[in-house]
Image (cartoon, rainbow, N blue to C red; front, side, top):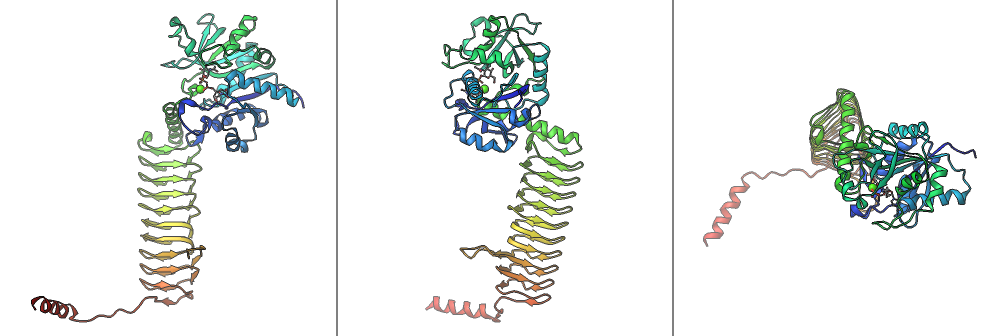
Amino acid sequence: MSTPEFAIAIMAAGKGTRLKSKRPKVLHEIGGRALLLHVIAAAETVVPANHIFCIIGHEGDRVRTAVASTGVQFVLQPEQRGTGHALQMLKADFELSGRPIPQHLLVLSGDVPLIRPETIAAVRDTHLREHAAMTILTAVPADPTGYGRVLRASADKPEVTSIVEQKSLRPDQLSAPEINSGIYCFETAALFARLDALTTNNAHGEFYLTDVAAMLVAEGKRVVAVTADSVDEVLGANTIAEMMHLDAAMRLATARRLMASGVTIFRPETCVIDAHVTVGPDTTIEPYVQLLGDTHIGSESRIRSYSVIQNCAIGNNVTVLNGCIFDDSEIADNANLGPYARLRPESRIGEGAHIGNFVETKKATVGRGTKAGHLSYLGDATIGDGVNIGAGTITCNYDGVHKHLTTIGDGAFIGSDSTLVAPVTIGAGAYIAAGSSITEDVPEGALALGRSRQTTKPGWVAVRKAAAEAKKSC
Ligand code: UD1
Ligand code: CA
């Protein structure tokens, strides 16, 4: 193995005590994705995944499982004794495994998720240009409280003298405006040589990685700061409120990206759109819509208010009326759904089909131009093209033990309030009389009546009332 020029360490072992949550901090989500996955995605644009080292510890197995598919490496920090200790574990891992030590090490924080690839690259480039031992990414937010502060030798020079944590700030340093983002580039040998000298002699009783800055300066090494273009991208997520602030920032950025590509989003601040959703031009999204997960919508469609759509592929010129809930489903072009339609997983709605008011589908394929306008349950069903499903039709797919399939051929007509007891097949073009319970297959083109005959008794009401009156008066 040759010595890589750059590797990236992502510190992700902390518990996130300030979140007061059972879930490890780096698995909390913004924009519909775990914090750590956002950071890994940015890191991957700078170095290949096998040069990314996630330092995990608190609920380490859970974190590892959640991000394993990215192909990053893991280093265990069994006890979380501070950011300096996290890097001590990385150093020990390199030494133990005999892995070649990279010349430069970029360090990212698992809880600073909005970091952009360009900014990581800028830290790397400044580091090389300045021949620095340590380069620190900084920002000047409106309120620096809570962050470590970067102190420069002189305000207009890149040289840093030290990083001071919030709790260690002297009164005259409390207003120091420049914050440490927790993102750095090190000359790896210079960093590794100083890690063992860190102490826990501080307000938190932890090994602070930030102390390395002053140590390097004391030994005449060059430590420089580079300021991020935007403050938002270096903000940390230590509390739920901070996390939701980042979530809103990320979603607004997603909405802006979609609008820039020709999507109309009314009141974008009311919509919840995950980071990887795509929408085609001339589609309109009304207020209070949620588009989540792996959702992709074509062009010239309209999603009306209060619909929640997760992991769905929706075609062009589709209308989704108000209050629909769709999961893991596909909808072809020109379909029309809702209001209040519910597509449960594996529903496939064909071109130009209509799934109307209070219709629920699950594992159902609905053919082209088929209509189910009102109050139906279509589960485990394969329904052909041009079928008419009358109001209140139910596929009885469950016998208490197993699920069974209902198959309906092209052009069939299912009268209102029919129950189709699966397994059952209705042939193409067959008619089912309204109110039928269908328990046997119906051949193509047949009419099936599955209900008892109506009896009508003329004058019955008057006779009954007279009898009741007579009883009362005696
Ligand atoms: C840290 C910096 C602070 C900076 C801020 C930016 C230190 C001492 N302070 O503070 O100067 O302004 O980030 O957001 O570094 N972690 C581990 N192992 C540990 C402890 C933490 O992997 O033992 C990880 C955490 O999971 C987190 C990151 O390191 O992703 C930062 O830790 P955190 O405790 O949030 O540090 P801050 O107090 O925010
Ligand atoms: Ca933090």
